Structure formats: C-alpha cells, structure tokens
Image 1 (cartoon, rainbow, N blue to C red):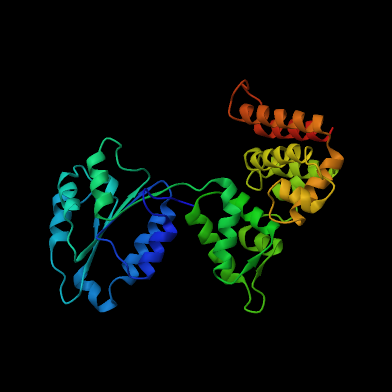
Image 2: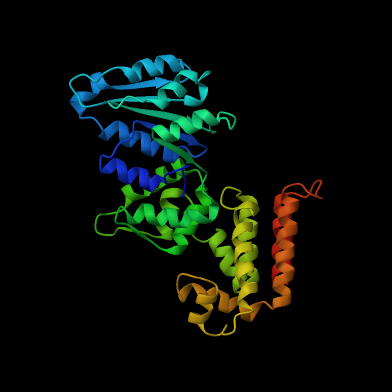
Length: 342
C-alpha cells in the first residue's frame, strides 16, 4: 500500500469521507492511481454541484506561477463555506517560494490540492516539505510491489461484491502488472461483463475479457513444475516463446523464486507432513495453500531445491545482461525449466 510521510491512503480517504478536511494536500510520487483517487474524490465531493462554478478551479503547473496559485488560494469563496483549488502537474512549477510562505499560514476557507506525479519534491527543499506537513497532508504514492498485486485485486473486487479465485487473481496480476490505473481499468471492464446473478471472476472470464489464456500462463507453469509434468511445462514454455505477451521469463521468475524459497523452508519444518503445521510454518493463509508445498517436498529434495534457487538467481542475472552477451530470454527460459525438471 502506498504510504505518506504522515498519513496512509486509507487514512486520508477515511478523513475525506467523514468531511474532515485539511487546508493543503500535496500528493506526489510515481504511482498516479492513488494521487488521482484522492484528487478526484475532493473534486467530486467537497463542494455541491451548484457551488463548483465559482469555487472550484483547476490550474496547471506549467501555465501558472506559485504566486498566482497563492493569489487564487487567498480569495474568499462565493456563497459557499470553502473553495477548492486543484493544481495539476505541480512538478512543473519553477519557483515554490511563494507557496512555501503560504503553507506557513494557509487560508482556512481553501482546500489546495497539489498533484505532483512521476517524482517527488526535491530533497533539498526541506523547509518547503516541513511547511507542507505543518499545513496539511504530504502524501507519497509509491509503485506497488508485484507481490502485493493479488491482495490489491482481491480487495478491489471484494469492495464491489465480486469474488475471485486464486488462479484468476494471479492471471490478472501477471498479465497487467503494477500499473494500477491500467489494472483497475481492466478490472472495471471485467466487472461490467459479469451477469447480475453470477458475480464471480473465473479463469474463463479472465481469458474472455483480458485475453489471457487460462491454459498457458505463469500459474499453470508453476503447477506443472510443482507436479514435475515435463510435457505440460514445455508446452507452456514453447507457447510463451511464441507469444511473449502471454508470459515471459520476467513474469514467472519472481513467482518461481518465491515458491522454491518457501519449499526450502518447508524441508526444515518439524511436521512437514501435516498440512496445518506446514501452513503455519510457512505463514500461509490456509491449509489449502500448503498443498503445493507438500507435493514439492515429494518431488524435490532439499539439495535439488538449493540448486534450483541458485539457478534462478543465475538466470535472473543473465536476463539483465550480466555475464550474458547474447543468449535471448526464450533460451534462458527453456534452459531454466530443463534444469528444474531434470
């Protein structure tokens, strides 16, 4: 979850929904999704529709100066309790001295929203940062880690009264990646497609709406490897080689590394034949999640797992060009799977 210097996204949204407003919201960072969510909520909910014409302004950092923003923020609202000033592309402001002075004594009748995308305030402007924090909210929206995507997808759908299975979640996460704006757009497309009497996202729905094969994907590759199904694993790898958008070395390496890292830990579990004990040992959500590890314990010795982890690290380095002048990703992919299964 994206974090701010002093408030989380959820905390900010909770306060906004309760109409507990701050005079200043400085929203910055590399993940545009959370910045847009906060900004859009303020734009759509603080003022009544009939108040917005005179009391809500949208400015652009490349078109105005800091002094002009301050002048707008100092104005009194017209026939309303407050006004809203939204500054988009705040990263393009050349000089922030006037804003720094404003932050030290912001107008009580203005909500100033600064949207600073693709970066954050220059670290040398400590006084400016301090002034913003004292005036209101300084929020940094950071890119979401890949391993957090499944829980984000599940939460997004659950809030809309839609269920999704683990495989479908992983298919979407692998196919879309961590661009949350694109991810939520694709999820919204899936939501629209669901009939009112069946609000479930299944692998077939994912294949139909997002275009990800339910049979040839990273999730199925992991399953084939866990069960040492050589034929199926090679089928999927060859499919990936011919259809890079369906899956690639870069999409399944982290997933395999996570699995075999946990499998190594599983070998040291005192009660590794007990699903409940193994799930607790690996800090898994349920006994069901331990099933693949119990299969892996039967199919891979501890020595083999150590070798696989080393091979995964080596392949990751080579995929980034280290000690690898010309071997393509497709060949590295096939070499890795051959090593794991033989």
